[in-house]
Each structure stands twice: as C-alpha cells, then as structure tokens.
Figure 1: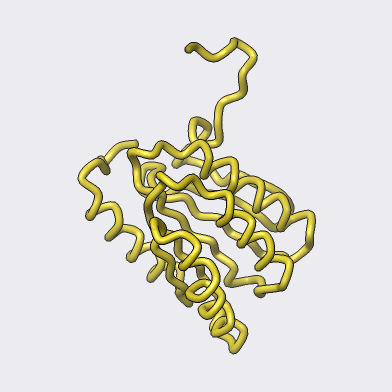
Figure 2 (figure 1 turned 180 degrees about the vertical axis):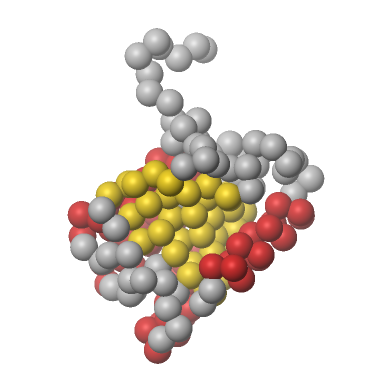
Length: 161
C-alpha cells in the first residue's frame, strides 16, 4: 500500500550520514558507517530532554528495518544515570519490537555511578530482551569498535545503506 502524499518520512528514512540532528537541547543524533550505526549523544539529565531522547529512540526502533541489525550508541558520558533515565530506558526496552535484533552500546563516564549503569544494563535491560546485545563502555571508540563487529557478523550488512 502506498503512503499518502502527506505522510512524513519515518525516522529511518530521514537518516543521513552527513549531519548531526539536534533532537532537543542537550540531545543529538548522528549516523556512522554510511548510516548503519546510530549514535545518540545526551549531555543533560533534564526531563524534557530525556523524554525527547526516549521518543526519538522509540520512533527509530519502530521504523528500523527488521532485516538489518539495530546498532546504536547511547552516549551518556557527559551525563549521569538518574532514576528517570533508568525509567525511560526500561520503557524503550519494553516497547522493543520482538523481531529486531542487534547491539546497543552505552557510553558512560568513568565513575562509580557507571558501575551502577553496568549493573542496570546487565541485570534489568539485557534479560528483558535477549535479541539485543548490550554493553557499557567508557570510551566511544570502544563502543564503535564493538558495533562494527556487529556489522561484520551480519551477512545482510552492506557498505552502503
């Protein structure tokens, strides 16, 4: 069925490897590897910003083609894990399409709080959805390298999106 002429493009269709998209003040999205890896950068813990981040992630996850691995970085290296961020992360995870597989990396500041973030990811998020591998990193380069391995492991991944 064709889309109506007034339909807005999905979050997936709007992706661009050439730009940084500001989602909200303190929240941005950039695409890596020919728009096969999405990176959200969150530098604030304000509720409106976290709500905007969560809605952007949910919209993209629902639009993501199921024949491609979902590969994402959630960069919270300039923010901290608050109870509200944990609540929104759980909400994203609970609304995850069961058929979508891939990897999700969280980049955290190297603090004691980051250890709590690792526990949250491994004990609360990971068991809820085994189709998504989740890891916490302290450097975005390490997170990117881990996601690149996800591209190599997927026979459907191509050099161009």
